[in-house]
Length: 473
Image 1 (cartoon, one colour):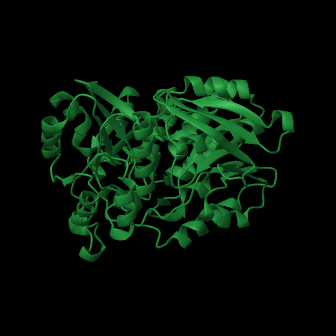
Image 2: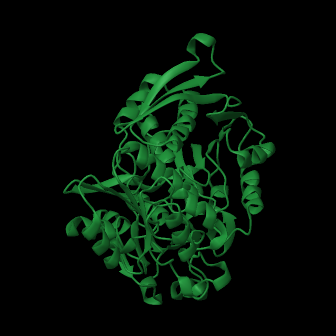
Image 3: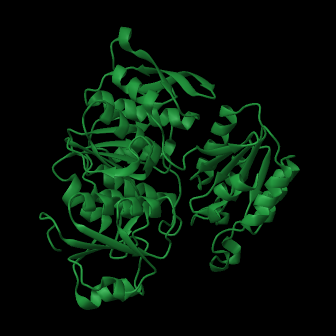
Protein backbone atom coordinates (compact mmCIF):
# COMPACT_ATOMS: atom_id res chain seq x y z
CA UNK A 1 0.00 0.00 0.00
CA UNK A 2 1.38 3.42 -0.90
CA UNK A 3 1.56 5.75 2.10
CA UNK A 4 -0.80 8.73 2.01
CA UNK A 5 1.00 10.88 4.56
CA UNK A 6 2.16 13.21 1.78
CA UNK A 7 -0.10 15.25 -0.48
CA UNK A 8 -0.69 14.96 -4.20
CA UNK A 9 -1.05 11.20 -4.40
CA UNK A 10 -3.26 9.92 -7.23
CA UNK A 11 -6.10 7.85 -5.82
CA UNK A 12 -8.69 6.02 -7.90
CA UNK A 13 -11.99 4.86 -6.37
CA UNK A 14 -13.55 1.87 -8.10
CA UNK A 15 -17.25 2.01 -7.20
CA UNK A 16 -17.10 5.65 -6.15
CA UNK A 17 -20.81 6.42 -6.06
CA UNK A 18 -21.58 4.38 -2.98
CA UNK A 19 -22.34 6.75 -0.12
CA UNK A 20 -19.30 5.82 1.94
CA UNK A 21 -16.93 5.70 -1.03
CA UNK A 22 -18.01 9.12 -2.28
CA UNK A 23 -17.63 10.56 1.21
CA UNK A 24 -14.12 9.16 1.62
CA UNK A 25 -13.14 10.40 -1.83
CA UNK A 26 -14.07 13.93 -0.80
CA UNK A 27 -12.13 13.65 2.47
CA UNK A 28 -8.99 12.67 0.55
CA UNK A 29 -9.55 15.42 -2.02
CA UNK A 30 -9.70 17.93 0.82
CA UNK A 31 -6.36 16.58 2.10
CA UNK A 32 -4.76 17.59 -1.18
CA UNK A 33 -4.75 14.32 -3.12
CA UNK A 34 -5.76 13.90 -6.75
CA UNK A 35 -8.95 11.85 -6.61
CA UNK A 36 -10.93 10.28 -9.41
CA UNK A 37 -13.27 7.34 -9.73
CA UNK A 38 -15.65 5.18 -11.70
CA UNK A 39 -19.01 3.49 -11.23
CA UNK A 40 -21.85 2.04 -13.25
CA UNK A 41 -24.58 3.59 -11.11
CA UNK A 42 -23.99 7.33 -11.22
CA UNK A 43 -26.99 9.18 -9.76
CA UNK A 44 -27.90 11.85 -7.17
CA UNK A 45 -27.33 12.71 -4.44
CA UNK A 46 -23.81 11.24 -4.58
CA UNK A 47 -23.13 12.18 -8.21
CA UNK A 48 -24.03 15.81 -7.39
CA UNK A 49 -21.92 15.67 -4.24
CA UNK A 50 -18.86 14.48 -6.17
CA UNK A 51 -19.36 17.05 -8.93
CA UNK A 52 -19.59 19.85 -6.37
CA UNK A 53 -16.21 18.73 -5.04
CA UNK A 54 -14.70 18.61 -8.54
CA UNK A 55 -14.07 14.85 -8.57
CA UNK A 56 -14.16 13.29 -12.04
CA UNK A 57 -16.28 10.15 -12.33
CA UNK A 58 -16.12 7.78 -15.30
CA UNK A 59 -19.41 6.04 -16.09
CA UNK A 60 -18.84 2.31 -16.34
CA UNK A 61 -15.91 0.11 -15.35
CA UNK A 62 -12.90 -0.33 -17.61
CA UNK A 63 -9.20 -1.06 -17.28
CA UNK A 64 -8.67 2.19 -19.20
CA UNK A 65 -9.94 4.08 -16.14
CA UNK A 66 -6.69 3.08 -14.40
CA UNK A 67 -4.55 4.78 -17.06
CA UNK A 68 -2.44 6.61 -16.01
CA UNK A 69 -1.73 4.32 -13.07
CA UNK A 70 -2.82 5.70 -9.71
CA UNK A 71 -0.73 5.44 -6.54
CA UNK A 72 -3.58 3.65 -4.81
CA UNK A 73 -6.89 2.03 -5.79
CA UNK A 74 -9.74 1.99 -3.27
CA UNK A 75 -12.03 -0.93 -4.11
CA UNK A 76 -15.68 -0.71 -3.09
CA UNK A 77 -17.38 -3.58 -1.31
CA UNK A 78 -19.90 -4.08 -4.14
CA UNK A 79 -17.17 -5.12 -6.57
CA UNK A 80 -15.93 -8.67 -7.08
CA UNK A 81 -13.74 -10.80 -9.31
CA UNK A 82 -14.63 -10.38 -12.96
CA UNK A 83 -14.93 -6.61 -12.72
CA UNK A 84 -12.52 -5.24 -15.37
CA UNK A 85 -10.92 -2.77 -12.95
CA UNK A 86 -10.48 -5.38 -10.22
CA UNK A 87 -8.82 -7.70 -12.73
CA UNK A 88 -6.54 -4.91 -14.00
CA UNK A 89 -5.49 -4.04 -10.42
CA UNK A 90 -4.56 -7.66 -9.69
CA UNK A 91 -2.76 -8.24 -12.99
CA UNK A 92 -0.75 -5.01 -12.74
CA UNK A 93 0.06 -5.48 -9.04
CA UNK A 94 -1.31 -2.02 -8.23
CA UNK A 95 -1.59 -1.03 -4.58
CA UNK A 96 -5.19 -1.44 -3.41
CA UNK A 97 -7.13 -1.14 -0.18
CA UNK A 98 -10.70 -1.31 1.12
CA UNK A 99 -12.59 1.79 2.13
CA UNK A 100 -12.82 0.63 5.74
CA UNK A 101 -9.10 -0.09 6.10
CA UNK A 102 -8.25 3.30 4.63
CA UNK A 103 -10.57 5.01 7.09
CA UNK A 104 -8.99 3.14 9.97
CA UNK A 105 -5.39 3.98 9.20
CA UNK A 106 -5.67 7.53 7.90
CA UNK A 107 -8.66 9.07 9.63
CA UNK A 108 -9.61 7.18 12.80
CA UNK A 109 -6.36 5.99 14.37
CA UNK A 110 -5.16 8.43 17.02
CA UNK A 111 -8.63 9.83 17.67
CA UNK A 112 -11.48 8.80 19.97
CA UNK A 113 -13.71 6.68 17.74
CA UNK A 114 -17.47 6.91 18.29
CA UNK A 115 -19.25 4.19 16.30
CA UNK A 116 -23.00 4.01 15.69
CA UNK A 117 -24.19 0.48 14.91
CA UNK A 118 -27.34 -1.61 14.57
CA UNK A 119 -29.74 -2.69 11.86
CA UNK A 120 -31.69 0.58 11.73
CA UNK A 121 -31.15 4.24 12.54
CA UNK A 122 -27.40 4.44 12.00
CA UNK A 123 -27.39 7.37 9.59
CA UNK A 124 -29.79 9.61 11.50
CA UNK A 125 -28.12 8.80 14.84
CA UNK A 126 -24.62 9.43 13.46
CA UNK A 127 -25.73 12.75 12.00
CA UNK A 128 -27.38 13.83 15.23
CA UNK A 129 -24.34 12.78 17.27
CA UNK A 130 -21.99 14.69 14.97
CA UNK A 131 -24.13 17.82 15.19
CA UNK A 132 -24.29 17.67 18.99
CA UNK A 133 -20.49 17.40 19.17
CA UNK A 134 -20.14 20.19 16.63
CA UNK A 135 -22.49 22.38 18.67
CA UNK A 136 -20.31 21.67 21.70
CA UNK A 137 -17.32 23.03 19.72
CA UNK A 138 -15.55 19.67 19.65
CA UNK A 139 -14.98 19.88 15.87
CA UNK A 140 -15.43 16.14 15.20
CA UNK A 141 -14.49 14.37 12.05
CA UNK A 142 -17.25 12.14 10.74
CA UNK A 143 -18.29 9.67 8.08
CA UNK A 144 -22.03 9.23 7.64
CA UNK A 145 -24.07 7.12 5.21
CA UNK A 146 -26.05 10.08 3.89
CA UNK A 147 -25.92 13.84 3.44
CA UNK A 148 -26.22 15.49 6.87
CA UNK A 149 -28.12 18.69 6.17
CA UNK A 150 -26.45 20.71 8.93
CA UNK A 151 -23.06 20.13 7.32
CA UNK A 152 -24.30 19.81 3.73
CA UNK A 153 -21.94 16.85 3.57
CA UNK A 154 -21.63 13.22 4.58
CA UNK A 155 -18.03 13.49 5.77
CA UNK A 156 -15.52 15.81 7.38
CA UNK A 157 -11.88 15.63 8.38
CA UNK A 158 -12.33 17.34 11.76
CA UNK A 159 -9.72 19.23 13.77
CA UNK A 160 -10.96 17.80 17.08
CA UNK A 161 -10.09 14.61 18.93
CA UNK A 162 -13.24 12.71 17.93
CA UNK A 163 -14.19 10.76 14.83
CA UNK A 164 -17.87 9.75 14.50
CA UNK A 165 -18.70 6.97 12.09
CA UNK A 166 -21.60 4.83 11.00
CA UNK A 167 -20.67 1.24 11.85
CA UNK A 168 -22.05 -0.90 9.04
CA UNK A 169 -22.19 -4.67 9.52
CA UNK A 170 -22.00 -5.28 5.77
CA UNK A 171 -18.83 -6.95 4.49
CA UNK A 172 -15.71 -4.92 3.71
CA UNK A 173 -14.60 -6.05 0.24
CA UNK A 174 -14.30 -9.12 -1.98
CA UNK A 175 -10.87 -9.73 -0.41
CA UNK A 176 -12.00 -9.03 3.18
CA UNK A 177 -15.34 -10.56 4.21
CA UNK A 178 -15.37 -9.14 7.74
CA UNK A 179 -18.00 -6.54 8.64
CA UNK A 180 -16.85 -2.97 8.05
CA UNK A 181 -17.16 -2.01 11.71
CA UNK A 182 -14.24 -4.28 12.65
CA UNK A 183 -11.93 -1.65 11.15
CA UNK A 184 -13.20 1.37 13.06
CA UNK A 185 -11.26 1.05 16.36
CA UNK A 186 -14.38 1.71 18.48
CA UNK A 187 -13.85 3.47 21.82
CA UNK A 188 -17.51 4.29 22.37
CA UNK A 189 -20.47 2.56 20.74
CA UNK A 190 -24.17 3.07 20.21
CA UNK A 191 -25.92 -0.24 19.52
CA UNK A 192 -29.43 0.66 18.39
CA UNK A 193 -31.05 -2.68 17.49
CA UNK A 194 -30.46 -6.06 15.86
CA UNK A 195 -32.52 -7.91 13.28
CA UNK A 196 -31.88 -10.23 10.36
CA UNK A 197 -30.80 -8.24 7.33
CA UNK A 198 -28.31 -8.41 4.45
CA UNK A 199 -29.51 -11.82 3.37
CA UNK A 200 -26.88 -11.83 0.62
CA UNK A 201 -23.99 -12.11 3.10
CA UNK A 202 -25.51 -13.41 6.36
CA UNK A 203 -27.22 -16.79 6.51
CA UNK A 204 -29.07 -16.14 9.76
CA UNK A 205 -29.64 -13.82 12.68
CA UNK A 206 -27.14 -15.94 14.60
CA UNK A 207 -24.45 -15.00 12.07
CA UNK A 208 -25.21 -11.30 12.53
CA UNK A 209 -25.09 -11.66 16.31
CA UNK A 210 -21.71 -13.35 16.04
CA UNK A 211 -20.31 -10.40 14.09
CA UNK A 212 -21.56 -7.96 16.72
CA UNK A 213 -20.20 -10.06 19.57
CA UNK A 214 -16.77 -10.05 17.98
CA UNK A 215 -16.95 -6.30 17.43
CA UNK A 216 -17.77 -5.71 21.12
CA UNK A 217 -14.50 -7.43 22.01
CA UNK A 218 -12.63 -4.57 20.32
CA UNK A 219 -13.96 -1.86 22.66
CA UNK A 220 -11.46 -1.11 25.45
CA UNK A 221 -12.28 -1.40 29.14
CA UNK A 222 -12.20 2.39 29.48
CA UNK A 223 -14.71 2.74 26.64
CA UNK A 224 -18.51 2.78 26.75
CA UNK A 225 -21.37 0.89 25.12
CA UNK A 226 -24.79 2.58 24.92
CA UNK A 227 -27.21 -0.18 23.96
CA UNK A 228 -30.93 -0.56 23.34
CA UNK A 229 -32.31 -2.13 26.50
CA UNK A 230 -35.64 -2.99 24.84
CA UNK A 231 -34.17 -5.21 22.11
CA UNK A 232 -33.89 -8.89 23.08
CA UNK A 233 -31.30 -9.60 20.38
CA UNK A 234 -29.09 -6.81 21.69
CA UNK A 235 -29.24 -8.24 25.22
CA UNK A 236 -27.78 -11.56 24.10
CA UNK A 237 -24.96 -9.83 22.24
CA UNK A 238 -24.08 -7.71 25.28
CA UNK A 239 -23.01 -10.87 27.08
CA UNK A 240 -19.74 -10.54 25.13
CA UNK A 241 -19.03 -6.98 26.33
CA UNK A 242 -15.84 -6.23 28.28
CA UNK A 243 -16.65 -2.51 28.57
CA UNK A 244 -19.16 -0.57 30.71
CA UNK A 245 -22.70 -0.80 29.32
CA UNK A 246 -25.48 1.77 29.65
CA UNK A 247 -28.89 0.58 28.49
CA UNK A 248 -31.45 2.97 27.00
CA UNK A 249 -35.06 2.59 25.88
CA UNK A 250 -38.62 2.81 27.12
CA UNK A 251 -38.64 -0.15 29.50
CA UNK A 252 -38.11 0.06 33.24
CA UNK A 253 -34.96 -2.06 33.12
CA UNK A 254 -33.07 0.58 31.10
CA UNK A 255 -30.59 2.87 32.84
CA UNK A 256 -31.68 5.80 30.68
CA UNK A 257 -35.30 5.77 29.55
CA UNK A 258 -37.71 8.02 27.67
CA UNK A 259 -41.01 8.92 29.29
CA UNK A 260 -44.14 10.88 28.42
CA UNK A 261 -43.70 11.21 24.66
CA UNK A 262 -45.74 13.96 23.01
CA UNK A 263 -45.90 14.03 19.21
CA UNK A 264 -46.88 16.87 16.89
CA UNK A 265 -46.21 18.05 13.34
CA UNK A 266 -43.12 19.87 14.62
CA UNK A 267 -41.56 16.77 16.21
CA UNK A 268 -41.49 14.95 19.54
CA UNK A 269 -41.15 16.10 23.16
CA UNK A 270 -40.09 13.60 25.82
CA UNK A 271 -38.59 13.28 29.25
CA UNK A 272 -35.33 11.43 29.91
CA UNK A 273 -34.89 9.60 33.19
CA UNK A 274 -31.26 8.75 33.99
CA UNK A 275 -31.17 6.40 36.97
CA UNK A 276 -27.42 6.90 37.34
CA UNK A 277 -27.89 10.52 38.40
CA UNK A 278 -28.88 11.77 41.82
CA UNK A 279 -32.65 11.89 42.29
CA UNK A 280 -33.07 15.66 41.85
CA UNK A 281 -31.33 15.52 38.44
CA UNK A 282 -32.69 12.24 37.11
CA UNK A 283 -35.44 13.60 34.84
CA UNK A 284 -34.82 16.18 32.12
CA UNK A 285 -37.09 17.23 29.26
CA UNK A 286 -35.93 17.26 25.65
CA UNK A 287 -37.52 18.17 22.34
CA UNK A 288 -36.59 16.72 18.98
CA UNK A 289 -37.49 17.95 15.50
CA UNK A 290 -38.03 14.37 14.36
CA UNK A 291 -41.09 12.13 14.40
CA UNK A 292 -41.37 8.55 15.59
CA UNK A 293 -40.55 6.62 18.75
CA UNK A 294 -37.53 5.13 16.99
CA UNK A 295 -36.01 8.60 16.66
CA UNK A 296 -36.46 9.12 20.39
CA UNK A 297 -34.43 5.94 20.91
CA UNK A 298 -31.81 7.30 18.52
CA UNK A 299 -31.68 10.47 20.59
CA UNK A 300 -31.24 8.54 23.84
CA UNK A 301 -28.04 6.95 22.56
CA UNK A 302 -26.77 10.38 21.52
CA UNK A 303 -27.61 11.89 24.90
CA UNK A 304 -25.69 9.13 26.71
CA UNK A 305 -22.49 9.60 24.66
CA UNK A 306 -22.76 13.38 24.75
CA UNK A 307 -23.09 13.46 28.54
CA UNK A 308 -20.26 10.93 28.88
CA UNK A 309 -17.99 13.32 26.95
CA UNK A 310 -18.88 16.33 29.07
CA UNK A 311 -21.52 17.97 26.90
CA UNK A 312 -24.25 19.75 28.87
CA UNK A 313 -27.97 19.10 28.47
CA UNK A 314 -28.37 22.73 27.43
CA UNK A 315 -25.95 22.25 24.55
CA UNK A 316 -27.58 18.95 23.59
CA UNK A 317 -31.01 20.60 23.42
CA UNK A 318 -29.66 23.53 21.42
CA UNK A 319 -28.24 21.04 18.91
CA UNK A 320 -31.58 19.18 18.79
CA UNK A 321 -33.32 22.49 18.08
CA UNK A 322 -31.10 23.25 15.10
CA UNK A 323 -30.76 19.71 13.76
CA UNK A 324 -31.83 19.48 10.11
CA UNK A 325 -31.79 15.68 9.75
CA UNK A 326 -30.45 13.75 6.75
CA UNK A 327 -31.44 13.62 3.12
CA UNK A 328 -33.72 10.68 2.32
CA UNK A 329 -34.81 10.24 5.96
CA UNK A 330 -38.39 11.51 6.24
CA UNK A 331 -37.34 14.17 3.75
CA UNK A 332 -40.16 16.40 2.54
CA UNK A 333 -39.32 16.75 -1.14
CA UNK A 334 -42.10 19.21 -1.82
CA UNK A 335 -45.82 19.97 -1.64
CA UNK A 336 -47.95 20.64 -4.72
CA UNK A 337 -51.66 21.48 -4.66
CA UNK A 338 -51.80 20.47 -1.00
CA UNK A 339 -50.19 17.05 -1.67
CA UNK A 340 -47.00 16.39 0.34
CA UNK A 341 -44.29 14.12 -1.09
CA UNK A 342 -41.86 12.46 1.34
CA UNK A 343 -38.74 10.45 0.51
CA UNK A 344 -37.26 7.85 2.85
CA UNK A 345 -34.47 5.28 2.57
CA UNK A 346 -36.50 2.62 4.44
CA UNK A 347 -36.16 -0.86 2.95
CA UNK A 348 -36.19 -3.35 5.84
CA UNK A 349 -39.78 -4.11 7.01
CA UNK A 350 -39.08 -2.73 10.48
CA UNK A 351 -37.79 0.54 9.03
CA UNK A 352 -40.84 0.68 6.74
CA UNK A 353 -43.17 0.21 9.71
CA UNK A 354 -41.44 2.83 11.84
CA UNK A 355 -41.35 5.34 9.00
CA UNK A 356 -45.01 4.85 8.08
CA UNK A 357 -45.99 5.19 11.75
CA UNK A 358 -43.87 8.32 12.17
CA UNK A 359 -45.41 10.05 9.14
CA UNK A 360 -48.85 9.02 10.37
CA UNK A 361 -48.11 10.65 13.74
CA UNK A 362 -46.77 13.74 12.02
CA UNK A 363 -49.91 14.10 9.86
CA UNK A 364 -52.69 12.38 11.85
CA UNK A 365 -55.63 13.79 9.91
CA UNK A 366 -54.39 13.27 6.38
CA UNK A 367 -54.67 10.34 3.98
CA UNK A 368 -51.34 8.51 3.83
CA UNK A 369 -50.28 6.69 0.65
CA UNK A 370 -47.21 4.47 1.05
CA UNK A 371 -45.19 3.70 -2.10
CA UNK A 372 -42.54 1.00 -1.71
CA UNK A 373 -39.87 -0.39 -4.00
CA UNK A 374 -38.69 -3.85 -2.82
CA UNK A 375 -35.09 -3.39 -3.82
CA UNK A 376 -32.66 -4.45 -1.08
CA UNK A 377 -31.30 -7.98 -0.97
CA UNK A 378 -33.55 -8.70 2.01
CA UNK A 379 -36.77 -6.92 1.03
CA UNK A 380 -37.04 -8.83 -2.28
CA UNK A 381 -37.21 -12.13 -0.41
CA UNK A 382 -40.17 -13.98 1.07
CA UNK A 383 -38.46 -14.34 4.44
CA UNK A 384 -39.94 -11.09 5.83
CA UNK A 385 -43.22 -11.15 3.89
CA UNK A 386 -45.63 -11.25 6.84
CA UNK A 387 -43.68 -8.58 8.67
CA UNK A 388 -43.69 -6.40 5.56
CA UNK A 389 -47.48 -6.71 5.31
CA UNK A 390 -47.83 -5.61 8.92
CA UNK A 391 -45.52 -2.67 8.35
CA UNK A 392 -48.12 -1.01 6.10
CA UNK A 393 -51.05 -1.20 8.56
CA UNK A 394 -50.94 2.53 9.38
CA UNK A 395 -51.21 3.53 5.71
CA UNK A 396 -54.49 4.32 3.95
CA UNK A 397 -53.25 3.03 0.59
CA UNK A 398 -50.20 1.01 -0.47
CA UNK A 399 -48.44 0.89 -3.84
CA UNK A 400 -45.65 -1.59 -4.66
CA UNK A 401 -43.53 -2.04 -7.72
CA UNK A 402 -41.98 -5.23 -9.07
CA UNK A 403 -39.14 -6.47 -6.81
CA UNK A 404 -35.69 -5.51 -8.03
CA UNK A 405 -33.65 -8.13 -9.94
CA UNK A 406 -36.62 -10.51 -9.86
CA UNK A 407 -35.21 -12.87 -12.48
CA UNK A 408 -32.13 -13.52 -10.31
CA UNK A 409 -34.16 -14.70 -7.30
CA UNK A 410 -35.25 -18.36 -7.08
CA UNK A 411 -39.03 -18.54 -7.43
CA UNK A 412 -39.53 -20.20 -4.05
CA UNK A 413 -37.57 -17.41 -2.31
CA UNK A 414 -39.23 -14.40 -3.95
CA UNK A 415 -41.43 -11.89 -2.19
CA UNK A 416 -44.97 -12.80 -3.26
CA UNK A 417 -46.37 -9.40 -4.16
CA UNK A 418 -49.88 -10.74 -4.98
CA UNK A 419 -50.08 -12.19 -1.46
CA UNK A 420 -49.00 -8.88 0.04
CA UNK A 421 -51.72 -7.07 -1.92
CA UNK A 422 -54.37 -9.65 -1.03
CA UNK A 423 -53.66 -9.44 2.69
CA UNK A 424 -53.82 -5.65 2.67
CA UNK A 425 -56.97 -5.51 0.54
CA UNK A 426 -58.61 -8.07 2.85
CA UNK A 427 -57.91 -5.63 5.68
CA UNK A 428 -59.61 -2.83 3.75
CA UNK A 429 -56.31 -1.14 2.82
CA UNK A 430 -56.34 -0.56 -0.97
CA UNK A 431 -53.13 -1.98 -2.39
CA UNK A 432 -51.75 -2.00 -5.94
CA UNK A 433 -48.70 -3.09 -7.88
CA UNK A 434 -47.36 -1.24 -10.91
CA UNK A 435 -44.31 -2.60 -12.78
CA UNK A 436 -43.30 0.81 -14.13
CA UNK A 437 -42.73 4.10 -12.33
CA UNK A 438 -44.71 6.05 -14.92
CA UNK A 439 -47.73 3.90 -14.04
CA UNK A 440 -47.35 4.79 -10.36
CA UNK A 441 -47.11 8.48 -11.24
CA UNK A 442 -50.20 8.31 -13.45
CA UNK A 443 -52.16 6.53 -10.71
CA UNK A 444 -51.18 9.11 -8.10
CA UNK A 445 -51.81 12.02 -10.44
CA UNK A 446 -55.33 10.72 -11.09
CA UNK A 447 -56.23 9.76 -7.53
CA UNK A 448 -54.42 12.12 -5.17
CA UNK A 449 -56.30 15.04 -3.67
CA UNK A 450 -55.41 18.05 -1.56
CA UNK A 451 -54.39 16.99 1.94
CA UNK A 452 -52.85 13.66 0.90
CA UNK A 453 -49.39 12.61 2.02
CA UNK A 454 -47.36 10.37 -0.31
CA UNK A 455 -44.49 8.52 1.37
CA UNK A 456 -42.01 6.99 -1.11
CA UNK A 457 -39.60 4.39 0.28
CA UNK A 458 -36.63 2.84 -1.50
CA UNK A 459 -32.90 2.38 -0.97
CA UNK A 460 -32.28 3.24 -4.62
CA UNK A 461 -32.94 6.01 -7.11
CA UNK A 462 -36.44 4.64 -7.96
CA UNK A 463 -36.24 6.26 -11.41
CA UNK A 464 -36.35 9.75 -9.88
CA UNK A 465 -40.01 9.18 -8.99
CA UNK A 466 -40.07 11.97 -6.38
CA UNK A 467 -39.23 14.81 -8.75
CA UNK A 468 -41.26 13.36 -11.60
CA UNK A 469 -44.30 13.10 -9.35
CA UNK A 470 -43.94 16.67 -8.11
CA UNK A 471 -43.80 17.86 -11.71
CA UNK A 472 -46.83 15.76 -12.70
CA UNK A 473 -49.19 16.81 -9.89
